[in-house]
Length: 82
View 1 (cartoon, rainbow, N blue to C red):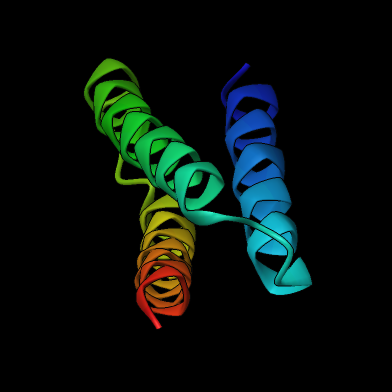
View 2: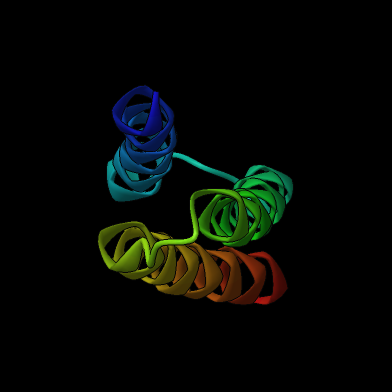
């Protein structure tokens, strides 16, 4: 069960990273991806508690997605201002 849950979260994070890498997202889409990343991070923390085991790989994936999404959000905001 733990593997299927972690695989589901990893797939969602990978999709967010692919969306960001495409470079086609506007500011609101970036913000939506950022919110989703934060939700997934909270989910990882809940699963860690439930499984009583660290999910380091998922935390790292969440961090990568959050950083990429935050950067894309800033870039899209700056592009809208320029």
